[in-house]
Image (cartoon, rainbow over all chains, first blue to last red; front, side):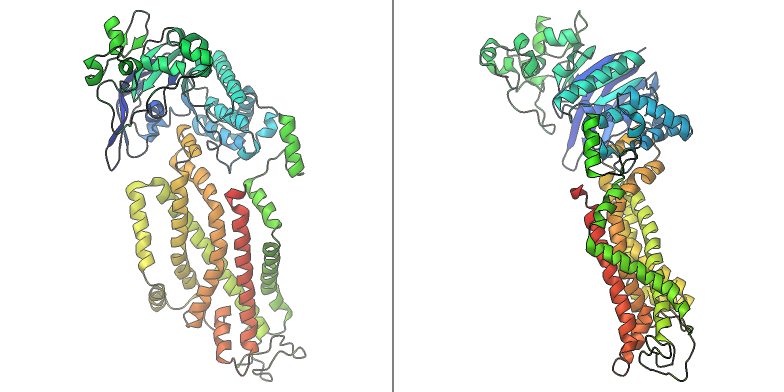
Length: 335
Length: 300
């Protein structure tokens, strides 16, 4: 049995003007001890999947489908049910460490609070454990930092504190929502290394939501590529980096600086340029008919591959022999 | 890197490296550089101390009538430092006693409105949706009630008493406070640390107590310091109209009303209580102003 199983999840936001379908029916299994990366542009719905899971959707957001954690259905459950799982079995790391900590509380207190809620620990014991965790995320002088306020720490240190907070109750699953986006490049690698270390020591499953493919390449086991609220391709790291089939994944790889040599076209390689993905991310209020990617798809645009299906039908996610899953009519046909 | 941060902290603050410096301490540091605010704070404390202790050094009591000196100007030989009123009562004692009442009303009514306003606003803002709409419409309705009408109604039903003033003023003042806090918590609940608290499984009560309220305190404290003078003026106004404290108790408002009536024949009767009130109000406004600068998040 998988640790977390998402079945046919959709998330819609109702605004005054229209319904926005942020997530349009995705199914996903996360195994125990696995690191899964979810990649996609802004607005692809990658964060919303996990906001729905954690019960963090705003009042106008609605989730449908099914999410099971350890066999327990957790989607749309009331807060008192969720509170037994959130923070204890599922930890969450936030994007911006500048805002994820309460500026008026010492970081130590913010950490011990979690332990007091979930494990009814007395303050003394909680303090000891919190300091240990701070050491585990490589915060120097942890005892001193325990009494610091967030504004006294650097961005990287704050993110370590946020990670420490997610780790406190030794969760089975950690959801990291773009944990490195707000940090500079050198700190990014440190944080990724830290996540890997945590994974190796505690065998925690990690879901990494990101738009930085190369950064996570060395970290994760599987990669899920999302576009306009659907999964377009899913496979192992090698599948995605060396055998990417979906034109969106290919374009995404070409747009990343570190993969120039392996995937970029010759013309671009000579110039040493990155190729951007043509067109604009789709407007969620007005998604293109058929495959949501078709207006930007290089095959469709160049006329190399034109199929009426692309324009009229939504491609299903199909599994191929290797286990790689692709949602593209061109691939389905070549099969 | 740690060594680096440490040198930076030690260069800016020499004291609080290991314990960590609270945002409050920072604000206090900034406030202490504001000369007007610090002087006002000193003066205000002085006035409070004088009002509390000085009446004891005068031989006269609040309602002692000195038949030999009725309506006399300030005179040290008879120990009427501020003179006497038309009934021969010592103005020095009466002004300071009145100060006690005025300051007590100001501080207590503000504190009451502060507590009610914060709780009400934080709950409304954090809960949001229909509850919020309902709670804030109730505030709107109370806002719409004419204040004087409300107070007169209360006095008619319950008779005049100092507690009534607290209730009347508190009932009006918390409305603005609630609105401020609600606005703050509406934006705070969107912040990532509140979300973080939710995903760590904190209850709504814990979130309001630990995360919402402490973060609203900055603007609220500023507003509170500006409310105190407003409340003192309110009380003076009520007393001036005869709805406030009862004789022989007095307050700055009452004394000013009496003094105003005798302004031409006995100007000292107006001068002393009026200047005490004016200085106090100035001080509170300067402190509020200084606090606003000190707590301004943009300067952090």
